[in-house]
Image (tube, rainbow, N blue to C red; front, side, top):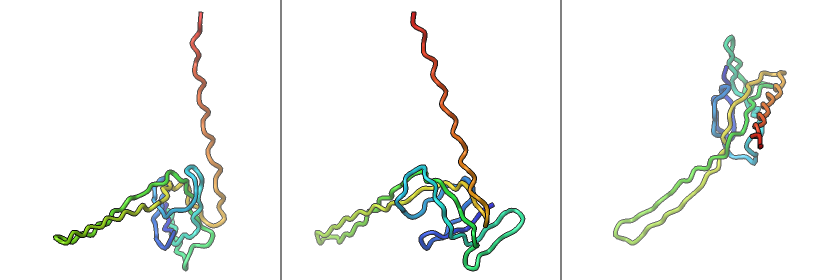
Amino acid sequence: MYAIFEDGSRQYRAEVGKRIVIDYRDIEPGQQLELPNVLLLQDGDGTLIGRPRVEGARVVAEVVDLPRVKTMTQKFRRRKNYRRLKGHTQPHVGVRITHILKAGEATPPPAPKPEPKPEATPATT
């Protein structure tokens, strides 16, 4: 099962478990993010093509990290003593796709995290 969704005038192919880097938004790692602009939805048996979007379908993702990419731009003219160096840092949001939902489907509750086992304390004599 996969879906093609649109975010920030770009289109992405989403599969459950896949990691995607999308445009920045103010969100913390570990939070869930819903992406409702699904253009195409394919599940084993059939394909739903939106005109322009598949109504009610959405992609649910979990924010994994906030990567930043540093780009350096340099201008140089030989023998003219002209050098310019500029840097730009572009923020992004790294997400992992957790669910692809059709119209009317509810988001499944998150799986409970296992509790850490208590450490055995050494006996003192």
